[in-house]
Image (cartoon, rainbow, N blue to C red; front, side, top):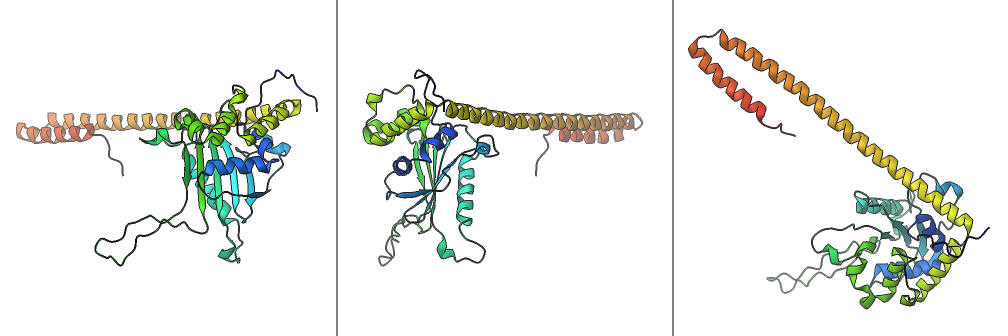
Length: 315
């Protein structure tokens, strides 16, 4: 393949095509990244990449994310992806696809004992968690475990409930890159900090800052990929496809919103016309009634107009 100028910037490892090119062929680098994002848990030993190849149709195909799927030494499934565009209900989406991976492990007549844990790892270029207190935490692990409850105060024979995890797990891990500056990882977890620098701005990193061997190796692989014209062309093609797809999704939302506004406007006009016709009929009736009847009907008209002025209730 033809090469490109050495002055050309490195490709963005947050581009899912580039991400997969880097990690689908280097299970050692993927293992290191996954274990650091998962934090203080038993390290995984990845043994097989299940989808190592990127087909031409993958670049502009229907998949919105090119992920890397692997197995570990205990048969657990690991799905790793990078996501740059904030998505509504992203955590629910991630859990849904993880649950599907669990369901797909066995057929209709196979035993549940064949099930193995599924682990999701998402590198996010947006803030997923925004509740008060979340701003200082960007590394998250969610797993199914029992609540750690104290013993009953009136039952000394009832011991506390330990925080036990289920043997077969749905485990989700998120790393929020925009919170990098607030995490203090350079002092508490330098290897993960180096990975965050790698993903955040590979062209602006002082390589003397990088000390973790796996991240140094990832930079070397990224430089090799970035120096190939075909790789750059495929990465740009992927960027264009995802950008166009997002634009179509955005246009769909805008079109739906505009249609909803127009429907609301039309219904409002129809209601207003109905109110107007009713008020005209009431005035006509008032003009033909005696004074006593007019007073009663005027009170009814006042009540009706007050009812019309209240916003409609929704069920």
